Structure formats: structure tokens, C-alpha cells
Image (cartoon, rainbow, N blue to C red):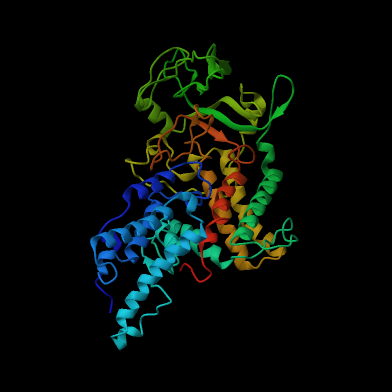
Length: 508
């Protein structure tokens, strides 16, 4: 039977080292972190889970007075165990085989002590295998932190969850990679290469290849809806974002212009490169030009909520008027600026008819129309007519996302033609789907423009869907937020997570 020894976690832990390890994981530029697989709100720190699992599997030295008879010896042994934890929780050691092996050996040593005690009971002895540590089961695995770290420490991990997104995340992080460990890629660009493909590097290589295959196919089908922009010298630049504002008709009957509901006209706050949008009033019409300098035009938004003033007549609207116009489908959108990328940084252009016309396309044949949950605490766009999934996206965004979704189905057949079997094709499609899901966060009409970093902000600045009046539409085929870049986030996790797993470890 199991002993009643105190575990290390019941006595003491190197909390400062654990906290520092958790803080490291908050770095948004940390490559290969499991959060890059898919967004999960309640994701737990890997370092904390790793430390907790280890410390609850290892006895505190005070439980073995026969080995450590004095407090000084017990404290010395505790310091040694702390040293293992301190090495474990550092992000730079997360794939260090030697450190992980030493932690596993410590867990195995403690488990064998339990097995030795159980030998006195013949019935219990049959249940204890000194060479196999008990499995860990997380019934509500969520983002998969606990089963992932259990695997990392050499434990057999089982996980389950009621949320299908959580199940997919766990499969992508924990179940699929060990299944294809050491397998070479099947894509024609790499399959002819000789040599060893360690861990899940072959799988990750295929994810990258077929992600780029998807982008090239999409470029052929919908590339025309993402036109380039020319500078004053005639050179073309790839557009990375279009800045839009929602509009309503001014309630002043004398004015009646399409007033922009813009929260800000500022585009860049970078020192020496300050850029803004300048509204130009021409009778009852408003056009927009790019301006430079620190003196930014006053935005129409005058208070929190839907409170705006007309840029033409200066008259103020009420939130009720904005809401009624939105619910009656009498709002429109206007292009205020075009953002391109170059070797010298971001370039800003005034709107032109080519880019305005490129966005005027119909919705795709098949798109999601499910209604959004009526949750006024967290979903604030319902009051303004954005009450179903499709209304959160521009028509161009819907076309792009539906195209990517269709290509995931097609890529499975392509993988099989290249030599992969059906199971492998399904595995690759899971990662590609995660990449499409990631790009959705940056490709909807709730995404704002980050004027500090000069990029498109993701929709989930918090666990809610707010109402955004001026938004940034990203280019899903080129630029820093194209489909291959979000698939690379997923591949970067897949290419490293297996290096710490023994072949016998698996997820169920």
C-alpha cells in the first residue's frame, strides 16, 4: 500500500525561482510556447505546473530519517531538490534532456521506494511496477499545461475536457506529435533529403510547407482582392492593412453628411515618424488624406460609448441615434488610410478608388451565420447590429477565411498524393486549422490599429468582444499577419515539443 510520507510540496518550494520561470513565459516574443498553438484564456504557466508535478511526486527529506537523520542533512537534501526545480523552471532549459532526465530519475527513485514498501503486501505488490511511474490524469485539461508537463517529466498522461477547443489543443500539443516522432516529411521540397528528422521536425516541416501551399493557392484565387499600392515614384508596395471607419448620416438635416465614427485619427506615434489622417471637408462630403507631424486632428469621438460629433457641422449625436441607425442597417464604412510595408518601415497612403473598389465584393457562398450569444457583460457589439458571426467580418475577410477553410480540405488530398496516409493528412490539417483560427483574431472588423507598434491589434485585448468604430483590416496573404505567419506560430511549437518526450510517453 502507498506510504504516508510527506511530499516536498507539503514542506517547502523555491517560490522565487518558480515565479521567475513563470514571468519568463509572459514574454510575447517567446518562440515555441504552447500558447502559439491556439488561444486559450485560462492557460496556466508551464513552469509552475512542472514544479508542482515534480514536487508532489518526490518525498520531502524529513520523511526519511533513516537517510537524513539530522535537520542539517535534511536541509542539504532539500537544497539539492530545490536545485533540480530551479533548473526545471527556466525556459531556456525546457528542452534540456539532461535536466529533464535527472528530474525523471528522482521521481522514479521515489516511486521505487513506494514499491519496496508495498512488497510486504502480496496483493499490493502486483499493482506496483518499480519501472513504471503511475500515470497522470487531468479530467479538465483546458489548454493542456498539466498533461504536457507530466509528459515532459516522463509520466504517462491522460487528459479530457468538455470543451471541443480544449480537446483539439491537447491533441495538437500532446497526442499527435509522439505519433509521428522521427518521421521524415512527405512534401516534395524535403522528402528527397537524406538524414535523420529528430523528434517532430518532419511533421513541423510539412506543416510549414502545406501552409505555404495554401497561401499560394489562395493567392491564385483571391489575390486580386488585395491590390498593391504605388508610391509617388511609381514603385509598388504590398499593403499590410486598410484603416476603415464606420459611418452614419449626420442627424442635422442641414448637414446630412456621412459622418465618420472614428475614435482617433492618429496612425503612428513613433518619434520623427508621426503620422495621422486628415479629414478634408468638401461640402457635404468628407475625404481623407495622410498628414505628418505631432498635431493630430481632433477625433469625432467625444466621450465614452457611442458619443460622436460631426466633422462637417460640429453637431453631436446621441448614443441612441447611433444605436438605432446601426440596428436599422443604415451604417456604412469608409476607407481612411492604406498602410504598406517597406525596408524603411511603414508607409501610409491616402485612399484611392482602386482600393475602395477592391473591397466592394460579395460575401462567399458559404459562411457562418450563427448568432452570437446574448452576453451584454462581455459581448458589446450586439446593440449595434453585429449579432451574428458573419457580421463581425468584412466581405473580403469572409472570402479569405472561407477560402482558407476550403483549402484545408483540399490539402489533405494533396498530402496523400505526396505520399502521406489519411491519418497523417488529418494530423497536418489540425495544425493548419489552428493557423487559420489564429489569423481570425487579426482579421475581423473588431480589430483596431496599434499606433505605437504600427500593426493590427488582435480582437481579444480582453476576454470579450467590444464594439470598435474604426478598425484595421489586415492583408491575409502578405505582410506580417499573413496565413503562413500564423501557421508558423503553430509549427514553431510542433517542432520543439517532442524533443523532451520519451517514445513511451503518450496522451490519451
